[in-house]
Amino acid sequence: MSDESFVREVNEELRQDQMKAIWRRYGLAIVAGVILILAATAGYVGWGYWNEQQANQSGDQFSTALDFANEGRTEEALEALGQLEAEGYGAYPVLARLREATLRAQAEDFEAAIAAFDSVAADSSVPDPIRDMARLRAALLLVDHGDYGDVASRAEPLADDANALRHGAREAMGLAAWAADDLENAQRLFEMIVDDTAAPANTRQRAEMMVELIAGMIPRS
Picture (cartoon, one colour):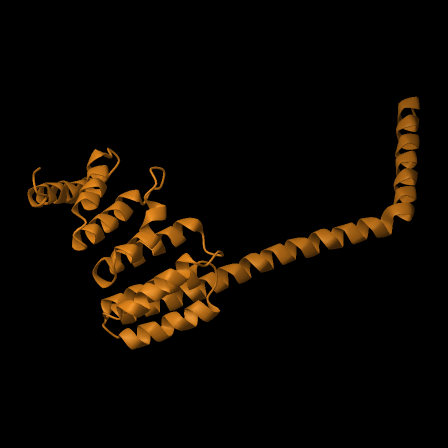
């Protein structure tokens, strides 16, 4: 046997002895660590599967409710949405609340629709953009079914220059002011839309039309 082979065998035996020593000392800890990793992986995969199943089930329920609504089966749609609000998963309960409010408005149950939108707007667990949208929807309904104070209490917080919904909020308040014969306030609100370069084209066109209409109604000094 060459010296090189002898040295190689000695090194191999030393490594084996070291591995045996490590195993005797840390074997249980290694096994426990492997078990924990496997359990965590299984738990993560199981949780992901459960989340997916729950989301799919709620999605199917929401789709069924929309089908009922599109078919004119309003009561069945409201029942399905109510169940989803109580038992749904993820964002679907909030979507169900918004859709229920819309259905009630379409059925001309405006009081219930406004109350439903107000409920979403007041719910701190709902993301702020959705709460703001619910406020605006309530304000728009109140243009025809409330007074300027009702509209402004929902829309005014959204009319700030930094709010993405400011155009709709200003339009709602402008229409409510016009209906209340507060022409100067209405003109001011519509002019804010006209002067805002970020306003959607259709919203700006409606505002321009209202500015011209109101200008013809305000007595000249």
